[in-house]
Image: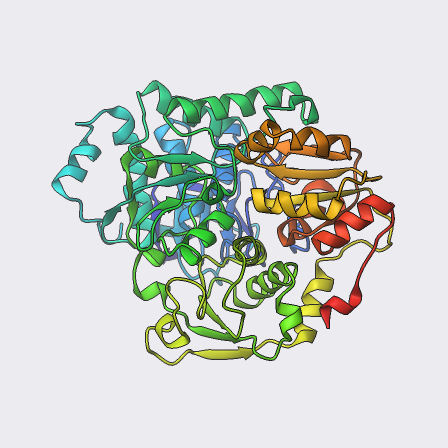
Length: 134
Length: 420
């Protein structure tokens, strides 16, 4: 078991299998809000469903409408369980802030070095920013 | 988390709910966003242009209606970007009835909050022009880059959900292009080797913009060596190309744009980090990337991204010169421009010559073009960039004159010599 300290961007507790993306992603035009699957052309994980996973992302790119896609995924119950990002992104977090105002479920987002994470490994994000790998 | 944003007494009152539940909700979102963006304080903004009125899904509609229910009202003049409904010709939209109903609810919620029903991506050409140095909170990437670069107003590239919250409180996080330092040009783009004939054609500017976006990402450039009088619609096309292919929020043109009387001023009297010489071959290569169609067959001409101005409509009419187009020509424009054309009888004349006006919306943001794909000719780098992904249509990028001649003859007409 390993414990990693992270910076909390949106707090909360979440656990699940890690899904590590090999390239940055744009939620707008890159994730289908009706299915939660990755549709970004040429993305190494194209076709993979992000719902329920602890999504580990090197960085977010693209349109400012990504916040709307994040909100749509949360409202539809298709969002990841939590997000660990290598580079902070206010646009994605904005979708979660709005979900919180609507009293819809939210997910934690933390920022840290992501090279230690492996797809499939059980990963838990804690409210205080500790990330625990089993 | 992180550095707390310092709020003034009146901002704390907004945050605490002393001015109503809607302002408190909007303020919580603005303040938390400011924290995530690394801003230490907020600034007052004098206008807003809101991009969030285009329907992406039900959740956004519910949030806007929530703000209406809480008694929300915008605190500053707020214009609206395109919606997913063509109110003058609703039958043109091919989305299902449910999506259209939700799209209309989203638009209604925005006007209920006091936003002006402008429904255009070029609000700056329908009378909404912030002044040099004014702090604003605008969305829609082409409007942002125009306001920053051509007008010298100050905004970051804002977007869905945050835009309406900033309009309700009249405040924005103070960071990025709101500040002096971030507006400094760090890259000098030297166009002095390009011929005067190349830099005099309107279609050069969207291509230069596409090159800028692909090459610079979000860096601020000062472009040197261009003519001193560049038509506003060319500056609009340059910015739209740069903002679509990259994340450009501001560019300067030495001797043209208001913060760049010369290169040194645009660089805030520091040496640029990099200087790039633009060659005719680089421009031709970028233009070629805007063509995705493999053959010379085409199905339609699509114009007006950003929305066609009065001047552009006039240029189109002049080239068409009363002839009838064999292929449909979609002209996307604002209701302000369309209504003026309608009043003078020019809209009817153009419609009888094969023009299909798309008003309040646009062919790449809303399902309008027939079939599951095809080929569009366009003079817009933004249409060329998004066309395939958003509509399934391949694109042929061409000058306005080439587009019109092709529509009239039914065959692609090109003048390769223009690009030498």
